[in-house]
Amino acid sequence: MSVSPYDRDLDRNPANFQPLTPLTLLERAAAVFPDRPAIAHGPLRRDYREFHARTKKLASALAKRGFARGDTVAVMLANTPAMLECHYGVPMCGAVLNALNTRLDPASIAFMLDHGEAKAIIVDREFAPVVAAALKRAKTRPLVIDYDDPEYDGAGERLGGLDYEALVAEGDEAYERTAPGDEWDAIALNYTSGTTGDPKGVVYHHRGANLLAVGNIVTGDVGRHPVYLWTLPMFHCNGWCFPWSISVKAGLHVCLRQVRAKPIFDLIAEHKVTHMCGAPIVMSILLNARDDEKRPLPHVVRFFTAAAPPPAAVLKAMGKAGFEVTHLYGLTEVYGPAVVNDWKDEWNALDADAQAHLKARQGVRYHALEALDVIDPETMRPVPADGETMGEVMFRGNVVMKGYLKNKAATERAFAGGWFHSGDLGVKHTDGYVQLRDRSKDIIISGGENISSIEVEDALFDHPGVQLAAVVARADDKWGETPCAFVEMKPGHSATAEELIEWCRARLARYKCPRHVVFAEIPKTSTGKVQKFALREQAKLIDASPA
Image (cartoon, rainbow, N blue to C red):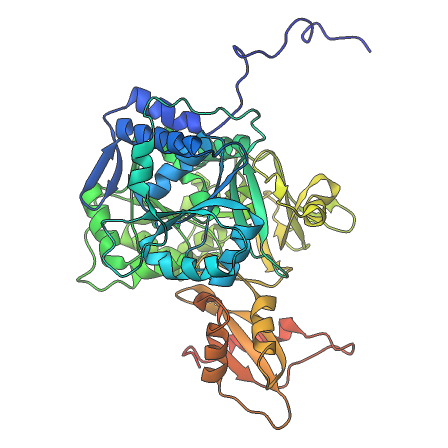
């Protein structure tokens, strides 16, 4: 085989090739715009010079304590300055950031600490009780670092002997980050519950994080020095990579501990917020705010939402309230959103109902994603672009995860045929835009969080009086979807809906528990398989008030 002249004596070297990483984005922002505001949190203000310096000190302190390539640093933090610093400081020393879902129960957190082999955990005082319970269950014994946020005035003990600020003070501001030996090196670990068994650890690499971070800016048409309000949890797919994205344009991170109407409107008005992200629940909070909680918007605010498509009425109301909504779609395995409902100018001439119908579609691939299609999972051939033929939505490209940590079988299944199988069923319209029709694995999306119907069913089956349980999603104006349980009791046993809900609350994170319980014979096929499609139809007829 002959060698192309373009390959002869033209080798990679440090001058012409550097591994892609999002860490360079903050370095550039600090070098070019050192005095630009970077973080606002209550009265606290930090510019890019200080933001970068603190991340280097955090990395240096971790390195001094022996943290290196491949070590896992877990964090249980709210949307605070420390969480932003960890997105840079942890990978700067080569370690891997594991941002834990603050809504999870101790058993789930213990599993993640053990499975990810966490060498350290940084804990916000608010979440100390659940972490303390998790550490009692866990086999691993990580270094516990307490973070005391001045904006938190609630209860919560200190779990470790080391304070976060004391740790940062140990570091050297002149620290030179450890460049990833390969852009394929892991940068973050995120857990997704899937549908069965233990949570799966989704591994992100530096290359994908860089590409998706920049992709957010391109896809969102984000201009110079944006002001970004943190209404999306940073533990969720690393905040859809926006902790890194905002550095691209040297924007301002406006931190927010809790998503409440009044502080959201206050911060939008105070900082002139330009962009924010969130699940449909955030839109519900904004639209249902009392008059005394609202403030006039300084300008149109760009709002990016994912999960279940917003109802037409919600989209219309958001527009009237001064928010421009863009519908995104993705999964933890693709770094968050990798599909956008890219709006076309000619659609502006359509009536409101037609526009809402178009906005409900998931859309087309990000620039950073190489391929998106709806494919027949049996033949691995694309389905016709007719808006009717169902197939599985599949992804291919550099913003797809490395795979599932310590789970070769699940990784191979997910990548069968050279595509990432989302498990979501959808159609492809004549213009190539994808629209979801159903979820093949019965995942319930509530407030942006994935809930496994099987996990809820297992909790119900543990009740001594329950003979059969089936859980499906029920539409909810506030949360998008909530679990609805259908239950058959054993002969001679009885229970109330309230009793079964409390039973679940003792075993699951609160948001996973059913909001409605229906006692009835569960429809089945001739082979005994539960007919969930029939239950979904029944769930639509349930009165809006929870049981």
